Length: 611
Image (cartoon, rainbow, N blue to C red; front, side, top):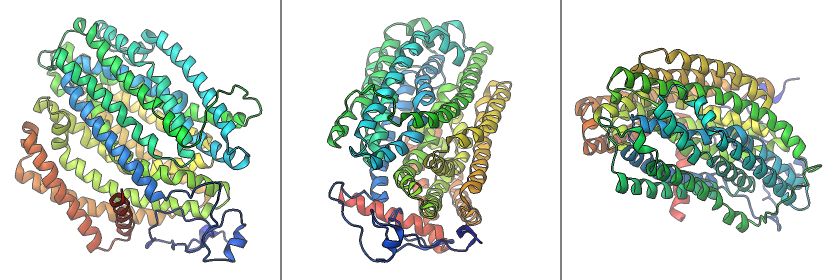
């Protein structure tokens, strides 16, 4: 007998429409016209093909994925814009971009994020949403008792771990910055003491946010970081008023950073993260979630959640290893250049990596995560109700829509890396702009595979198959650790550009492993059609990029590095031209994937006009 995935078309499954309310006009899929009615069997629902789902008196209608994606897009966009103002624009002025102090703060401020991910971050996304969905479905109190126990357990784990990490700040700093000179290592330890409490607040922000996501309240989780950025911006402005800006040609000695400067910078950074977490208490109460501490964990269902989470913790531990190597390699590049008397402006270190990575992640955070998160809860419900065909159809749609946007993003970053770098760090020298732009351009090549990886991960999470993800990450971790270590042997100027190359290679390997193993688990995901779609989009992006490069050649590649006005002219002029060319080519060539993009953008536009 041939299974459904051997046929040329996915059968029409009587399931609530999970799409972005857009027609599927390409590939092997047809739009569904029948809807599954909650509370009825699929057969019963199929007998009434045009009936609307019965309204529930106890729960409001679930928001559409388009509306949810818009809410998350707007929140993330606002937060990212404020984040760019905070870092690297203001942070670059207050601390510098390639200075030793900038690298010291970057190492210290990055560690809480890494430890939060190790303790709770991946666990919350992979485990909490499916667990809360199940508890809400199978309990009379809509999962309220389970949520209370979950938040209490998370708080206890986070608080105790944060206290231990803060006490162990000197040891932890040595792990991430063993290559630093003693005076700059001491400054990094001071920054670590101020920043490490962020672990608790990062964790609670994510736990409360995932509880709201499981209830399909997506807005607060994506808007809360905006408050963090506002507080951080105020703190950096205060630093500039009190201490002035930092210069790469005459950097402030480490001894002058050990007092008030470090306290203001580290303290304000932690205050912003605390506000980001605590503000979620308000939407929790509005959503009807009344948290009460509950330490009765036995028999609550947390045992299964914990078993699943062990593999997530193991995976995030693997992810921590490349981060440790990268941190030391980047810090070592700056220290070796400093010891050799080289021009620090030409050497990318930890701070340059963070600035490039922030831009690199923009398409993923604005588009990929917004779409993937919006369909994740629905995908989990679909898989729990054994509607795998509907979940797989949504996967293909999500990847095609995300890729249609990401190809344009990659072409844009490759062509406009220098203007973008000049704009986000207006206070640095042209040489530092080129240093950042070079790393950013190479790193951007990993955006395409990262988009598909994000969607595939959601399926693994919905299947509660975190064990497979752990084994997938083993060879990827070997590539990253080995690759980063080799780059650390190169001359300082070449270290970070080659780190970016290693990242791209690792993303491609991770994508291939994720896809082929997932295909064996759940059947065909339309791989041939996905490949054809990406080849079409890649060809259009290549032509668009060539046109943009031609325009930049006429303007002059170096001019934006010396002038913010010219950088803005290139960004808006050349950038707008590239967007128009890309969309026109998609339309003129009648590339089927374009219909997904245009319909999705139209839906977002209509939702935006109603706001």
